[in-house]
Image (tube, rainbow, N blue to C red):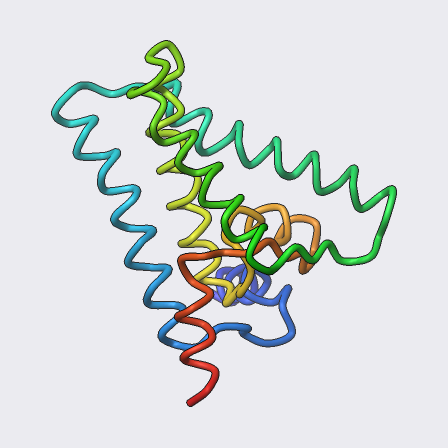
Length: 164
């Protein structure tokens, strides 16, 4: 029993303190479950697409992990990209990936992959109390970093809950 407790403690121990409040945690949990739920329901109706799951749960995280690892080797300072442009850019990237069935059907697998990646990342960010954009949750956790990219969806929740 002690071994399981140590593993759970290790999983949650990288950050010295939770960076988000209960409201931020709940918001990330809800959106994460909804995003993953959409893909699960779609798979039940239209059939399972393994490419979306591999790309969303392995491909995108590995891509960002590699980028963040290489960037940190060149410049070890925290990567902080917050403000209007990074917030909007993050939303644009999500919609470019999510809307592929409407503008380039051969890459439509990225739609579900984006939902899976963002959804799973939100769940990890909620579990770990990570305040930045969820797209860096996996790589920040594995690299033990605290790089930040603007997150238009959760920034208002985090700012409002901080003022209380």
